[in-house]
Amino acid sequence: MNPQTIQTHRLPNGLTLVVEEMPNVQSASFSILVPAGSVYDPPGHNGTASILSDMLTRGAGERDSKQLSMDLDNLGVQRHESASINFISIGGATIAENLPTALRIYGDVILKPHLPADQFPASMAGAEQALRSLDDEPRQKVILELRRRCYDSPWGLPSEGDLEGLKSNTADSVRAHHERCFLPEGTIIGVAGKISFAEIAEVVEEVFGEWQTKPAPTFETVPHKTVQDHIHHDSTQTHIGIAYNSVPYKADDYYAAWAAVGVLSGGMSSRLFTEVREKRGLCYSVFASLNSLPDEGRVLCYAGTTTERAQETLDVTLQELVRLKDGIEDRELDRCKARAKSSLIMQQESTGARASSIARDWYHLGEIRTLEVVREKIESLTVPQVLEHVNNYPARDFTILTIGPEALEVNVEVS
Image (cartoon, rainbow, N blue to C red; front, side, top):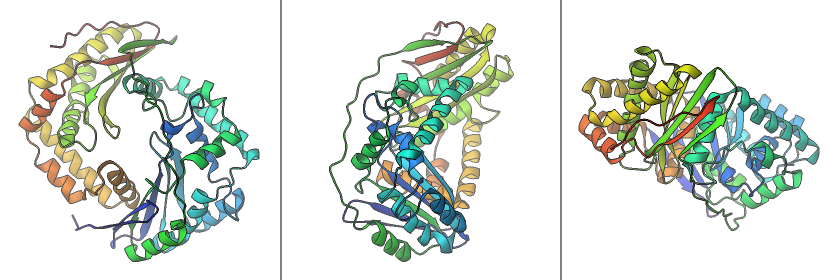
């Protein structure tokens, strides 16, 4: 891999710029993370951040919605806005020479959005449609509802909100969210591509240097209580969600945790795919992923199956999760490493992936892990290290959620 040139610059108002120069590409990408995510939604107004992320580009500064879109299209900006748990994320990619102009436009989007009242119904309708579509996507719904049950509130609440809370939002409440939560302290701008750090730092100082700081918003945490739950849904299918404790991204043994999940669910040779789907034909889809909040993590698992085979699917899936502590073969870890190498090579060629990654690293770590550092951490993993993590964070104390016509029983004993 080529050596990475990564530099950071912190403005006096608390905004942090992270830049990776990639001289061998022609494009440039940016990822702006504003600490205004769904954890800051007012109680009873779930979905506020999601609606705000949609309304941000409906006019800003001297541009109305149409002119804003035209100017960004003329620059060739491929753009996206979304709300997550922690942030409202604003990102885009374009040819490198157009990036400074694009950042100036997005300065207005962040600091001077119109948030027009006449556009609020359209944003609300889009948010409501997205929520209602979850009923037609139980695979997605079961993971969202599983998070609600395995994390403390509001960390576990869906960033999309819910239909009841959505109805409480108004154009004024969305504007209030922007006024309360959009602040430079904690905002991160990641930029990657064929750009000069000095030039980008100058533009960011020009655009965001006068952004006034203010007290950060707060929220209250409510502990989660549910261990096992069922949502009735008339169907011939049952969707199973399983969660158990792991480590966050910043943990020293994060990559051991990643490898453990990779053994379970990394491709068609993984344990869950082989044992649950291929050998027994119990389900049509099964996987696990490592999910991280700032200070805690979970392994989230999914299995989709027929109602008749749902109980056996749950039993066998739990058995596979539990028996991971009994041993891992070298070839299983080698396959995880090979997949990681392919991913790192592709990330090296993508300015969008790098802009997002360095911004995320700064949030979780307060520093940047270069691709070479990541490669070294993965290459150095050994089976004993992965098993040590598995024994420190064994598959037990499960949170289990099912969606389907009948509830299931937990029959697996965990010692």
